[in-house]
Amino acid sequence: MEKVLWNDQLVGRDDVHISIEDRGYQFGDGIYEVVKVYNGDVFTATEHIDRLYASADKIGMAIPYTKDVLHHLIHQLIEVNELGTGIVYLQVTRGYSPRNHAFPTPAVEAVITGYTRESARPMQELQTGVPVCLVEDVRWLRCDIKSLNLLGNVMAKQYAVERGGFEAVQHRGEVITEGSSSNAYGIKNGTLYTHPVNNLILNGITRQVILDCCEEIGLPVVEEAFTKQQAFDMDEFFISSTGIEVMPVTRIDETPIGDGTPGKWTRKLQQAFEAKLPQQLHV
Ligand code: PMP
Image (cartoon, rainbow, N blue to C red):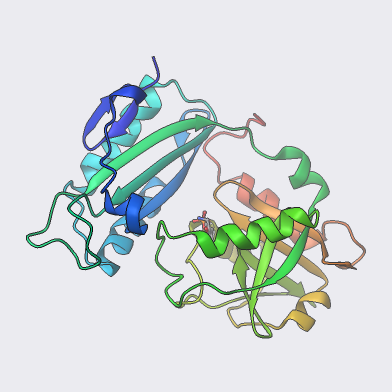
């Protein structure tokens, strides 16, 4: 039977009891991670767990287990659920106490939940590339925290989906920041451009892997913000995340990028990325 994580226990889904006054439920007062699993092997789990603790730290929340315990619980969850290729979702909320915006005093125990889900790699989209839509980035100014407050991201994504877009690429004024759940990159004259890591974007784990890939394939990287107009003029464009890997973008709004097909550097990055995956089965 499928098990889910509830604090440090693996239990049946129906055995999880979350208070309606859980601060994650009431305020979005919590953080999360999505870790990818390829053929039963977790990919970049250490980086994801480190980021989870970093997010907790940034919101003044203590995770009541060590990183090693979390690693172990994730592995156990994958094993008992016999997960092949898919994700582990993990979230930690500040716990529950009578509704009050201020943190509970004394602090209450954080609530951890997690589950696995089978999901195939998006092989077709990785091959053909996808269209995206530009949308104003109306999120808060701490996008570096992987917070449960995703309403800005949800609204952006829905805007894109309603216009036939695969993803929303956000901009603050003229400057491209990131996707609703992905990082964004353009390639012009053999150089890769992407927004610098600061409070306006999430420091994607896939982004970090991709920057290593750039070095391997000899693609220079400039971590500087670029504008909407520059985005339209890029030779190549792509987005990345744990779930979508290196996803070519062939159209931004009505404008085809390059010749409207995935570019050659993007293809090289896909290959370099694929070579880092635990096992290279297309499942
Ligand atoms: N930016 C945002 C807003 C995201 O939600 C995600 C997905 N977690 C990313 C970037 C990409 O991060 P990662 O590569 O770690 O999945």
